[in-house]
Length: 160
Image (cartoon, rainbow, N blue to C red; front, side):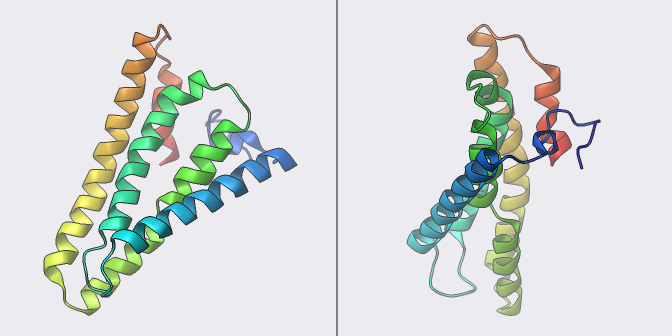
């Protein structure tokens, strides 16, 4: 059900049309494939090794989410852009469940030297990069002559 207090949130797009569903599904498939490919290429083979691929996906996705929410949404006025990139691609490229599973595996292996930095960098880095992406998007918007939209700037914080 739509949340009237969040007019720019994902709930605003309900009811989902076939086009919006397709945009989300295609974006999600590409995001999940991208995350898994990055993990396969970068992560170590041991369950307690440092999951650099997942960390990279989560941190870059946090930055992109902030940038999309403040800048690209205003530039690309296509009804399928946000469902494809933000809801589909970025949110499936980043993953709390994979982060959590990898962290639990490190705890089970008592790999504290990997666990503590992984959790700290993931959480604090993710918050910082959403903020930086949002600020960059705002700055780019101002430089390109767009008014600063306070509603758009606050959307990421409300959705998270």
